[in-house]
Structures are given as structure tokens and as C-alpha cells.
Length: 243
Image (tube, rainbow, N blue to C red; front, side, top):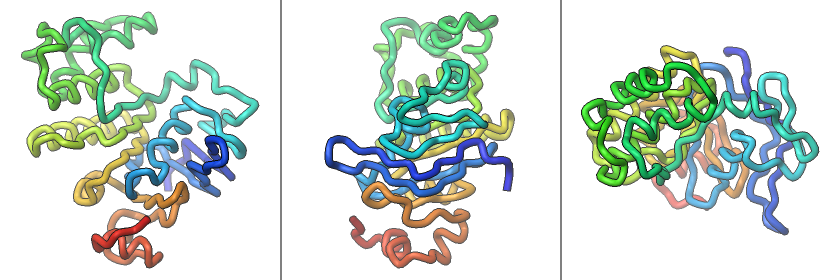
């Protein structure tokens, strides 16, 4: 296995008396795609927020490339900038498509924002819409712009929260291809939340099932689908209701 980029140990996240996430142990390696599957409300999006350092764990710790993140220790800005998230419902600014994609680069004061934005738009097949206003885009186009904005900053970790939900098959293929090409070219780690088991089969190196905030099973994708060890995983893969 490649070198772990994340190491989660005893990570608990509570909101009041409700436990949202309880992960005893999870390593995420450089260059891998880890698909997170499970029913709505299982804690997948909360886990992404912990991985992006948006919220601290109630207890336990997240180690990121040697830096510790816990309830008492915030993550440094330089480390946070190595990670980016693409959400299911992207928030685009009232400006052109190209300026939306370049926005993060300009905030960071990085050189070549315009050319890097153009490259990212080519990756997602939207170079012809670079000068269009973001407000004129379809839902699938807006999602591709959000992905291009993330890819433009060349993250070392890409967190995806249902980025292809409700998109047509052509847009799904474009987003999957762009993410996998970025992983191949940059060696980034990717954690991909999806309800689409066929998508998890296509894109993931490993798949993790979350139920009630806990990881039921984490396994290589082929093994997860063909020979699950936990009966709850077998039931979930088989299409039975699990909660």
C-alpha cells in the first residue's frame, strides 16, 4: 500500500448528544480513490468536513501528512490549502466561467491564473464557455465548472460530495474522466462520496461502507462487491435496505 496521507484514530464527532461520526481507524493513501457509500444520514458528508478541516473532531485526531488536527489543534492554512472539496450543489460567483475557475488561484496570489483556469476548463470540456456568465449555465455545466475550479489549484487531496448526483450520463462520464486523469497526473488522493454503486465500482481503488456514523467495512473495490466480509455490506451491495 502507498504511503498514508491521512491517519484517523478514535475520531468522534458529536452534535449535542447525537453521534455523527465514530471512526476508530482509517488510513487514506496518496494516489488512491476511496469511495464512501452508505444511506443518507450515515455520516459521509460529516466525515468529508473532518477531512477538509472545516470542523474539529469532538475527540480523537486526524493526522494529515504528519500534522495533527484535533479539538485543541487547528490545521495550519498551508496544510488546508492542499485539500479542496467539490460539493453536490456548487456555489458559483456572479462572474464569467473563466473568472470563477481562476478565483481560488487569484486569492492565493498564484501566477498564471488565467492559463491554469483555461487548462482546467479544457479538462472538463467547457473551454468554449469560458466567457459565459455563470448564471447562464445548466446544472451539469455548473458542476463541471466547480470541478474545474478545484482542479485548477492542483490539490493534493480532492474530496467529492456526490458531484454527479442528478446529472446525465454524458456529464457523469466527463466528471469521472477528469477526476481520474487528475489523479493519474498529480498522484492526488481522492475521497468520493456516492450513492451510485456502479460509479464506486468504476472509479474506486477501495470502497468504504458507512452506517450510523461508523465504517462497517473498508476493502479493495473488487473484494467489496464480490466477497464482502460483513453481512451488512452484502445486504447493501445486494440492494437490501440497510440503516
